[in-house]
Length: 151
Image (cartoon, rainbow, N blue to C red; front, side, top):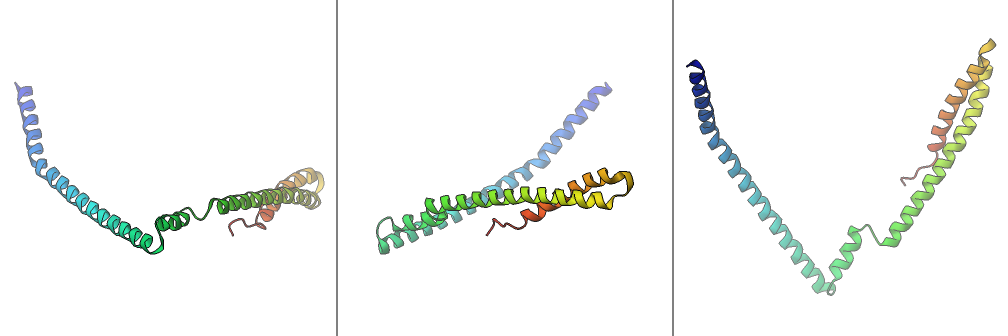
């Protein structure tokens, strides 16, 4: 018998919770709907303003002038300009990579020589290795910094 009472109590608690939360969910849905409607109205007004601007521009400069001018602006210029820009960036990256390689080689050699001379006794080989690695990393970083591709 007690399990039936517990089950009935649980069902009553769930029903009470559902009745309590029902007005809250409908209020939230109404707020969302009114916000959506306001945003849609704002979008439609902006769209109408843009269409009128297009018609005015075309009336002044000829049919299709708005699209020709603003399409080129939105694309960042003409395709030839973008192709040149990509080619310049590619060349810059190649130069930067070449400089990094040369810097790593020269830095590695210099670091190995310095590391070997600074190390004492039987640790000259270890000093040369550590100096070479550190010199290569430093030389590469310094050489990369000499070329700036973000101009």
